[in-house]
Image (cartoon, rainbow, N blue to C red; front, top):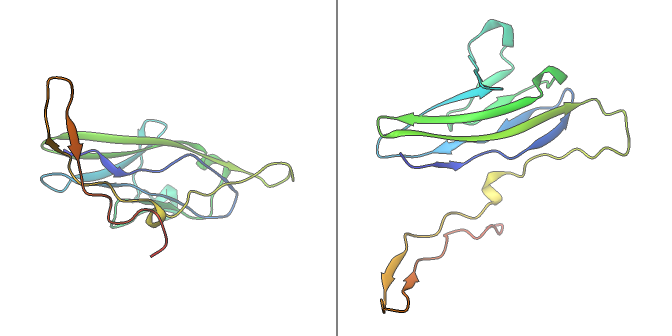
Length: 143
């Protein structure tokens, strides 16, 4: 099982907006992604969630019409027969009553650089080793 490729980062958002908690994972066999809030599984089909929680085809979790009760620690869990990998971050939902409070949204993951290629070992000496790898396809700049 490879690690979670893209996980979410801590976010502080206002009531009534939407949040997307990105999560992408890969493995020898496609992993099954599930979500937890404060260590408890999130059932996106539960009627009590009023369809505000949707797990996207990518594995990301979208929460619409945020409420203060949505504040918590969210964990993306990817599992397959090779193992399990998790990524955890917090979501804080606040009323916008204080002009001194700054709210931040996680940047779109398409702006992040991709992973570099697999390192190749060459020029091994008793004092060291040189590694070489291909640079990322995307360095984070807008294409």
